[in-house]
Amino acid sequence: MSMWEILDIAPTVDEKEIRRAYARQVKKYRPDSHPEEYQQLREAFEEAKQYALYADFHDSEDDDDQSLISIDSSTVEEEVSDPPYQSELTMTYPLSNINVLETAVEIDALPVVEIPYNSEQLERIAGLLIKDEKFGMNELALLWAEVAERGSLLIHQQFHEEFSWVLSQQEGLTEAIVEHVSTFLGWRLNEYSSTHTIPFYVQNAINEQLRQTEVARAWKQCQIEAVQGDYLVAASMRLLVSEQEKVSFKVRLIPGLIPQISQQVEQLTYEYPELKDKFNPAVQSFVQQPRIAFNWRGIFLCVFWGLLLNMVAARPEVSPTVAIIAAVIIVFYLFISDIIMFWLHSKPKLFKWFLIIEFFVTLLVVLNLIIGLFLSLSTFFVALDVGPAQGARAMVFFIFIGLAWYAWPRNKPLLRMPGMALYRIFASPWIILEWLKFSWFSLTWLVVIYLVYYRVAYELLKFFTLEHQLGL
Image (cartoon, rainbow, N blue to C red):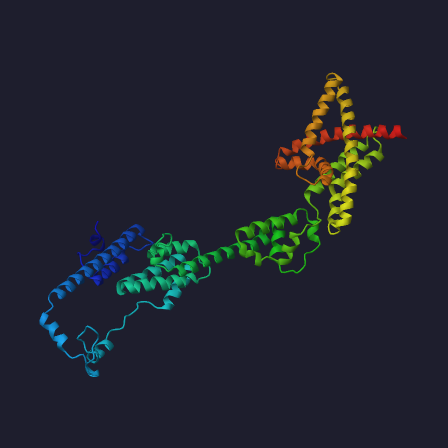
């Protein structure tokens, strides 16, 4: 169908007739009930206006050319022969025969351009779009039909600019609303030439309002999770959205709470940097500093090694003294060493001396651990009678190679390497469960890990018990 068939009029260059036809058709094809027909009607309306504008422009050019051709040479001579001086009462515009005083009344009598809308209507419709988008779009369609029928092209452009600015000032503005309005009014905000309809500064204002809506929604979600979220999530959000000036000591007693707060702050401020000013500054400062607090890793390792050493110490072949020494060594490298370094970090001299002493003590512990494991496990494999003694020792040797490769840290200070190696060995049950991502079958592996560690600890402590008894 041609644009004239869609508008249901004969071809014409009368812009008013085109607008009246568009107004009649837009009442039949509303954007909410007939979106495809409305889009065709909109395109036909724009093409018809361009056609009328193009035809008027060429007609005016033809008239100008004809007037230039019909200039009478005698008139030109008369104008040249006139004296250059004219009285004030007969003063005319340059290159014109029109008298200023004669036309003054006509200029004052020009009709005032009537604008078919007002600012109150724009404010009301923009507010309706936020509260009830469907109802607001219906009201916008009615107003735009009236503007399209009664207003000129200049009024159309003025309407687009004013309404887009009013819309950009509405709190709660969403991308869906902007997209629907843009499609309906033909703003084409996603296109490169969108500034032809909506100025760049208005588009920036719309984008800023959309961003404010996203931040407000994120902040509202934080407040909801502080009440309805999981235990750790709710606890962390309650602290972040609170206004308390100090962080309670109880925060340290909840396992995993401090890492959860740090994770929430990092994730949310990465997506919405504006939330950093809304979150509690005392809580943010608290989690940014290293803190001593309970965590599930420490609780698990305490229970794991506590049960294991208790069962090993109950065997008659193991001395309680040796079991206690083993427990002290494990607790020191899992917890006490880090606590001491935390307190001495602000005292460089004491911190340095502690690292040196720990380095040599740890070397002694590692040496005894290697000798004890090698001899005890070699004896264990030989006792199994699975092959010659050389094969058993070779098996133990390869086990040590794998253990050393896993435990020995890389790219760390030399003074910390032995201590970190022992920490990795003693924390390996938890590290293995982390590697298994705490899945359901990790419980089966936990039983296997416990049995293996129990057997190794039993053989090792039995060996040191014999050494202790021989030493006595």
